[in-house]
Length: 203
Image (cartoon, rainbow, N blue to C red; front, side):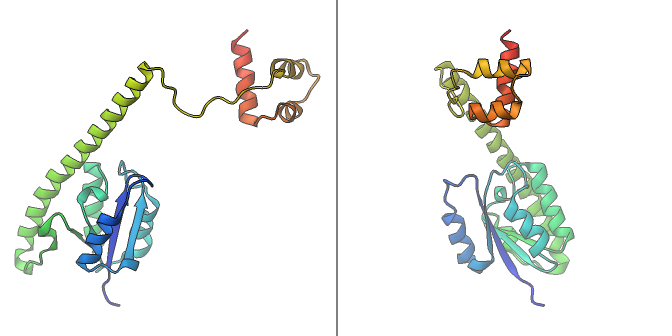
Protein backbone atom coordinates (compact mmCIF):
# COMPACT_ATOMS: atom_id res chain seq x y z
CA UNK A 1 0.00 0.00 0.00
CA UNK A 2 1.16 3.57 -0.71
CA UNK A 3 2.62 5.62 2.09
CA UNK A 4 0.25 8.34 3.17
CA UNK A 5 0.53 11.89 4.47
CA UNK A 6 -1.58 13.19 7.35
CA UNK A 7 -1.77 16.55 9.04
CA UNK A 8 -2.53 17.48 12.62
CA UNK A 9 -3.76 20.85 13.90
CA UNK A 10 -4.54 21.94 17.45
CA UNK A 11 -5.94 25.03 19.11
CA UNK A 12 -6.36 25.36 22.86
CA UNK A 13 -10.06 26.20 22.97
CA UNK A 14 -13.23 26.16 20.89
CA UNK A 15 -13.09 29.95 20.61
CA UNK A 16 -9.73 29.85 18.81
CA UNK A 17 -9.49 29.40 15.04
CA UNK A 18 -7.42 26.69 13.38
CA UNK A 19 -7.58 28.21 9.87
CA UNK A 20 -3.95 29.42 9.93
CA UNK A 21 -2.71 25.89 10.57
CA UNK A 22 -5.08 24.30 8.05
CA UNK A 23 -4.04 26.74 5.34
CA UNK A 24 -0.34 25.95 5.94
CA UNK A 25 -0.91 22.18 5.92
CA UNK A 26 -3.01 22.23 2.75
CA UNK A 27 -0.53 24.53 1.02
CA UNK A 28 2.23 22.04 1.86
CA UNK A 29 0.24 19.32 0.15
CA UNK A 30 -1.65 17.52 2.91
CA UNK A 31 -5.10 16.41 1.67
CA UNK A 32 -7.74 18.32 3.62
CA UNK A 33 -9.62 15.10 4.43
CA UNK A 34 -6.42 13.77 6.03
CA UNK A 35 -6.13 16.55 8.59
CA UNK A 36 -7.14 15.79 12.17
CA UNK A 37 -8.08 18.74 14.41
CA UNK A 38 -8.21 18.98 18.19
CA UNK A 39 -9.57 21.87 20.22
CA UNK A 40 -7.83 21.11 23.48
CA UNK A 41 -5.00 22.26 25.71
CA UNK A 42 -1.42 21.35 24.89
CA UNK A 43 -0.63 20.58 28.53
CA UNK A 44 -0.31 16.88 27.60
CA UNK A 45 -1.02 14.49 24.72
CA UNK A 46 -4.32 13.01 25.95
CA UNK A 47 -6.44 14.50 23.19
CA UNK A 48 -9.12 12.52 21.37
CA UNK A 49 -8.17 13.37 17.79
CA UNK A 50 -4.44 13.06 18.34
CA UNK A 51 -4.68 9.70 20.07
CA UNK A 52 -6.99 8.36 17.34
CA UNK A 53 -4.56 9.56 14.66
CA UNK A 54 -1.60 8.06 16.46
CA UNK A 55 -3.11 4.70 17.42
CA UNK A 56 -5.66 3.98 14.68
CA UNK A 57 -4.53 5.75 11.51
CA UNK A 58 -0.77 6.26 11.19
CA UNK A 59 1.31 3.27 10.16
CA UNK A 60 4.90 2.57 9.16
CA UNK A 61 6.00 4.62 6.17
CA UNK A 62 3.42 7.39 6.69
CA UNK A 63 4.26 11.05 7.20
CA UNK A 64 2.73 13.35 9.82
CA UNK A 65 2.85 17.09 9.13
CA UNK A 66 2.30 19.76 11.78
CA UNK A 67 2.64 23.54 11.59
CA UNK A 68 4.58 24.04 14.82
CA UNK A 69 6.29 21.79 17.34
CA UNK A 70 4.04 22.85 20.22
CA UNK A 71 0.98 21.52 18.38
CA UNK A 72 2.10 18.12 19.71
CA UNK A 73 2.43 19.40 23.27
CA UNK A 74 3.74 22.30 25.32
CA UNK A 75 5.61 19.89 27.57
CA UNK A 76 9.20 19.28 26.46
CA UNK A 77 9.34 15.74 27.83
CA UNK A 78 6.09 14.88 26.00
CA UNK A 79 7.42 16.31 22.74
CA UNK A 80 10.61 14.27 22.89
CA UNK A 81 8.72 11.09 23.81
CA UNK A 82 6.17 11.51 21.01
CA UNK A 83 8.86 12.12 18.40
CA UNK A 84 10.80 9.07 19.59
CA UNK A 85 7.65 6.94 19.40
CA UNK A 86 6.92 8.12 15.86
CA UNK A 87 10.50 7.36 14.83
CA UNK A 88 10.31 3.86 16.34
CA UNK A 89 7.00 3.27 14.52
CA UNK A 90 8.51 4.30 11.19
CA UNK A 91 6.39 7.46 10.92
CA UNK A 92 8.20 10.56 9.68
CA UNK A 93 7.27 13.86 11.30
CA UNK A 94 7.57 17.07 9.29
CA UNK A 95 7.33 20.37 11.14
CA UNK A 96 6.67 23.30 8.83
CA UNK A 97 8.34 25.80 11.17
CA UNK A 98 11.52 23.64 11.27
CA UNK A 99 12.63 23.52 7.61
CA UNK A 100 15.33 20.91 8.23
CA UNK A 101 12.62 18.36 9.09
CA UNK A 102 11.31 18.82 5.56
CA UNK A 103 14.67 18.07 3.92
CA UNK A 104 15.54 14.68 2.44
CA UNK A 105 19.20 13.86 3.09
CA UNK A 106 21.11 10.99 1.44
CA UNK A 107 21.14 7.89 3.69
CA UNK A 108 24.83 8.32 4.52
CA UNK A 109 24.16 11.85 5.80
CA UNK A 110 21.00 11.09 7.74
CA UNK A 111 22.90 11.47 11.02
CA UNK A 112 23.56 15.14 10.18
CA UNK A 113 19.85 15.79 9.78
CA UNK A 114 19.05 13.98 13.03
CA UNK A 115 21.67 15.98 14.93
CA UNK A 116 20.39 19.32 13.62
CA UNK A 117 16.77 18.42 14.30
CA UNK A 118 17.58 17.17 17.80
CA UNK A 119 19.15 20.52 18.67
CA UNK A 120 16.28 22.52 17.21
CA UNK A 121 13.65 20.36 18.87
CA UNK A 122 15.41 20.65 22.24
CA UNK A 123 15.46 24.44 22.00
CA UNK A 124 11.94 24.86 20.64
CA UNK A 125 10.58 22.30 23.11
CA UNK A 126 12.03 24.32 25.97
CA UNK A 127 10.47 27.49 24.54
CA UNK A 128 7.06 25.81 24.24
CA UNK A 129 7.23 24.55 27.82
CA UNK A 130 8.32 27.97 29.08
CA UNK A 131 5.44 29.60 27.23
CA UNK A 132 2.94 27.30 28.94
CA UNK A 133 4.45 28.18 32.32
CA UNK A 134 4.00 31.86 31.49
CA UNK A 135 0.37 31.27 30.49
CA UNK A 136 -0.33 29.45 33.77
CA UNK A 137 1.42 32.19 35.76
CA UNK A 138 -0.70 34.86 34.03
CA UNK A 139 -3.84 32.85 34.77
CA UNK A 140 -2.91 32.59 38.46
CA UNK A 141 -2.14 36.31 38.63
CA UNK A 142 -5.49 37.09 36.99
CA UNK A 143 -7.38 34.89 39.44
CA UNK A 144 -5.61 36.42 42.45
CA UNK A 145 -6.31 39.94 41.18
CA UNK A 146 -9.98 39.05 40.64
CA UNK A 147 -10.25 37.57 44.14
CA UNK A 148 -8.92 40.81 45.62
CA UNK A 149 -11.78 42.58 43.85
CA UNK A 150 -14.22 40.02 45.31
CA UNK A 151 -14.96 38.52 41.89
CA UNK A 152 -16.64 35.15 42.37
CA UNK A 153 -15.85 32.21 40.09
CA UNK A 154 -18.06 29.35 39.00
CA UNK A 155 -21.82 29.15 38.80
CA UNK A 156 -23.86 31.34 41.12
CA UNK A 157 -25.35 29.43 44.04
CA UNK A 158 -28.85 28.15 43.43
CA UNK A 159 -31.32 29.63 45.93
CA UNK A 160 -32.54 27.04 48.42
CA UNK A 161 -36.13 26.42 49.47
CA UNK A 162 -37.11 28.22 52.67
CA UNK A 163 -38.03 24.93 54.37
CA UNK A 164 -34.88 22.95 53.62
CA UNK A 165 -33.69 22.93 57.25
CA UNK A 166 -37.05 21.62 58.40
CA UNK A 167 -37.10 18.92 55.72
CA UNK A 168 -33.60 17.74 56.56
CA UNK A 169 -34.50 17.70 60.23
CA UNK A 170 -37.45 15.40 59.44
CA UNK A 171 -35.10 13.02 57.66
CA UNK A 172 -32.76 12.93 60.65
CA UNK A 173 -35.70 12.16 62.89
CA UNK A 174 -36.81 9.32 60.63
CA UNK A 175 -40.07 10.96 59.61
CA UNK A 176 -39.06 11.29 55.96
CA UNK A 177 -36.91 9.25 53.59
CA UNK A 178 -33.94 10.97 51.88
CA UNK A 179 -35.38 10.26 48.42
CA UNK A 180 -38.65 11.95 49.40
CA UNK A 181 -36.70 14.90 50.80
CA UNK A 182 -34.78 15.28 47.53
CA UNK A 183 -38.01 15.18 45.55
CA UNK A 184 -39.75 17.63 47.87
CA UNK A 185 -36.84 20.07 47.87
CA UNK A 186 -36.29 19.70 44.13
CA UNK A 187 -32.55 19.10 44.50
CA UNK A 188 -30.14 16.51 43.16
CA UNK A 189 -28.61 13.75 45.25
CA UNK A 190 -25.22 15.49 45.41
CA UNK A 191 -26.85 18.80 46.39
CA UNK A 192 -28.93 17.07 49.05
CA UNK A 193 -25.92 15.52 50.77
CA UNK A 194 -24.02 18.79 50.51
CA UNK A 195 -26.88 20.44 52.40
CA UNK A 196 -26.75 17.68 55.01
CA UNK A 197 -23.03 18.30 55.55
CA UNK A 198 -23.56 22.06 55.71
CA UNK A 199 -26.31 21.60 58.31
CA UNK A 200 -24.08 19.31 60.38
CA UNK A 201 -21.21 21.82 60.25
CA UNK A 202 -23.47 24.70 61.28
CA UNK A 203 -24.44 23.03 64.54
